[in-house]
Image 1 (cartoon, rainbow, N blue to C red):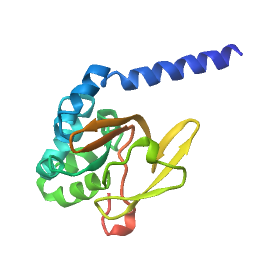
Image 2: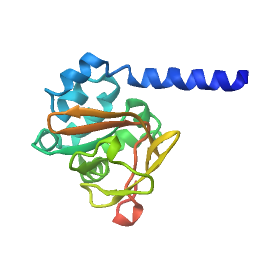
Image 3: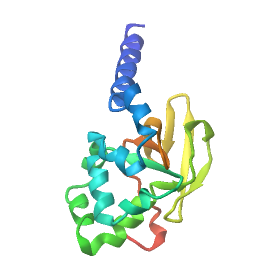
Image 4: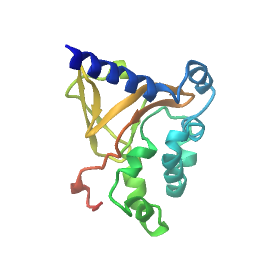
Length: 174
């Protein structure tokens, strides 16, 4: 029983830390920010913001939307194989970066309550994401949602712990 309590306490602590970038007052403030502004004001998403800028998607993600963005954290980008992010940020790889980033975006505003186990969602990139919902949380492809339903003026952000990649049959190699 002690092990169970320790694991439960650790889980609760991780959940609280995952929500730390979005305190209640910041959540209220987010209602006056678009997706890019929200991400720019969140230190844990600074790598995503740099990638959005390098891909030329800032204006798009500041548009009317609505958009649902599955936003990888800086740690998610750090977990990519060495040199991957640097390679993707190079101007000659812009198309590949756009393909990967738009795979993280679903048209429309999809809140966590709209998700169900086994569902798929078509991305702006054109491929489908797989959603699984369990007692342990929500997974999008191979990433776990660590913070859900962060609302912006033009959609919603769900923070995830991994960079997800479109299926390889789209013609690109990552």
